[in-house]
Structures are given as C-alpha cells and as structure tokens.
Amino acid sequence: MRNTDHDTFAEPVNTGGGSTFNKLRFAHTSDSPSADADVLSQTTIAKSITLDGIGLHKGTLVRLVLTPAAADTGIVFRRTDLDTTDRTITDIPARYDAVTDATMCTTIGNAAGTKVATIEHLMAAISALQIDNLLIEVSAEEVPVMDGSSDAFIALLDQAGQKTLASPRRFIRVLEPISVEDGLRQGTLHPCDEGLRIELSIDFDNQVIGKQDLALTISPENFRRELSRSRTFGFLKDVEMLRSLGLAKGATLENAVVLDGEEVLNAGGLRSPDEFVRHKTLDAVGDLALAGAPILGCYEASRAGHAFNNQVLHALFANPDSWEYVTCDEPVDVMDDVPRMMVSAD
Image 1 (spheres, rainbow, N blue to C red):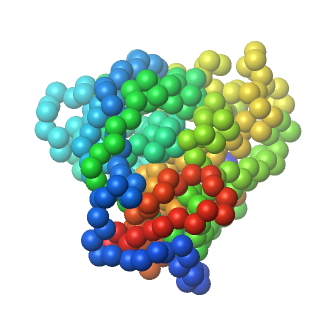
Image 2 (cartoon, rainbow, N blue to C red; image 1 turned 90 degrees about the vertical axis):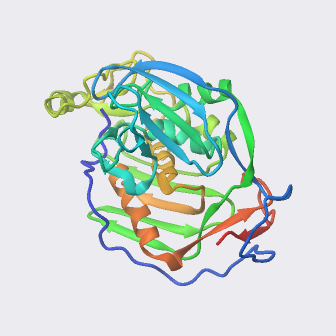
Image 3 (tube, rainbow, N blue to C red; image 1 turned 135 degrees about the vertical axis):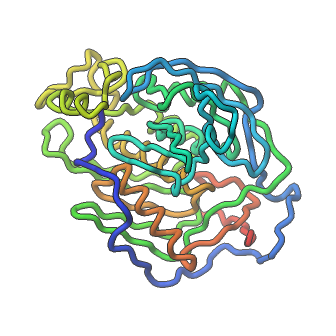
C-alpha cells in the first residue's frame, strides 16, 4: 500500500567512493579477535514465539514462528508451507544479495525460486533490538503486516527474550563515503563510529505529507520511542492499480495510513505529524539490516525507498576498500563523545 515515489527494483547505478576516512577510535588491530568478556557477543532469542496475521499484499493468513538460532547463523527465513524439507528450497538468508524484488516492499528469494515478501518491518525490529541470529518460519509467501508498523514485532521479540551466545558480534564499519544517485534519489553512507545513524528526507506532492526530514541514531530505545509505531502509508487512488498487480489485497485502515487527496481516512488520524518520514526511516533500518551485520555508519538519503536502499548496500559491498569488519568492546548505543574500542575482525 506504500507509495515510495514510484520506487522500483533496479541494479545499482552511478556509484562511487570518496576520500579515505581517518581511522578513529581504534585501540589496536588483530587478525584473530578473541571472544573474551570484553568483546560484544552475538545474540539470539531465548525461546520460540508465534504470531498470526494477514499479509499486506496477498491478503492471506500467515503464521510466523521465531526460533532461536546458533551463532553465525544470521537471520534465515524458512517457508513451512512447501511440500519439502529440502533446506535449499525452504530457506532464504536475509541478505542484500538475496533481494529479488523491491517494488512496494522488500522481497528475498533463493536459487530454487522460493520467496518471502514484506520482510522490512520485521527486519527493522530484529536489527534495532540487536538480535544477530534467528530462524523465522513463515507459512506463506509474505510476512504478516500487523498494524503496518514494527510495533507487534517489537512486542513479540520482547516476549521471546534474548540469549547471549559465545561468539563475538561483527560490525560492518564504513571507512569512506559511498554515494548512489538514481534520478531524484540520492544517498550516501558516511563513516560514523557511533552506530547506525539515518538522516532521511522525503518530498511528496501532497499537502499532508509534503517535505519531511528526520535524523536519528538507531538504538533499541530510540527505535521503540521514535520509529516502531509509524505505519506504512499509501493513497486511495492507487488501490485499484495495486490490486490489479496482485498487491495490497490485505490493505485496510487497520494496517496502513490511507490518504484520499489531502484527507487522512484513518479514524484516529496520524500517530505523529511526521509519521510518513518516520515510517520511511523504519523501512531503511529494515532494508539496511540485510547487510548481514550491524552497520557502523551514517546513511544520508533523499527520496529513498526499498530498491534504492538495496542499491546502496550493493554499492558498499562492491567497493571492498570502503568497509571492514570490526568487533566492539562496548555497546553500540546513543552515547555522545564516548570512545569505543574496536578490533579488526578480518
């Protein structure tokens, strides 16, 4: 249901690097970082948890089961509705290079053609709560939309709890700016050792939305407070077109903000005047989570959507000199002017 400035999936274009970033806050380097008590460890959830809901685009009932996973598993989606137990068919890693489509939502797939769509709101919650390893069993081709935000997924993960694993967490540290341009869309990943920071702007030809900006360093607390309840949005005039494309079949006023011209049709109105840019920032958190590890960098973008966010990740990983793996010995959180010890994890 979401309108993303006619965002469609495409390969990265006009990518380029910048000047090398001065390597701040490095205490020392090591080819073999140890998993001692001083290094942040990987996490998973403490117990399995289940959630049922409707898919936004297919409109089907979906059961989601989140299950703890071992260290270095990453986030893996597993289709449980298929008539096979062959993991090369059922399983899809949540990675940027598994994205098969990003029109209106983010869809990942594997070589067997198995797909799971609308993963971004769940991935945003997983990433924001700093969960590294998880098996996500899904009974259909789409993650349930719930109320169109990440709120239900945050509650689900809180109920499951977290467990620390005996392996170091690796971060992707941006070393030099990587920029992408695609028409009016622009985006740059800058070095930033304070965690993931997103500085996003949107511009819609609609008086309710208009131009909105948001800058936020992503931490569990900031995500809960500032982003988690912001809902997906779209326009009533686009509904029939979307449904003719097999999309938005499950969209209602209960799971999306719907605008009819300059009127918000939802009875309760907006959850905040800038709910639109907050939701686009939530989407960006979920899309960037497909990097495969937490990003230490600042994502500055204008008019970005799912496809563009994926282009930026492709541009980053296409330039091996622009990033590196590191481990950290303090939580990556919102802490002004506090140096963090980092160790090369290469």
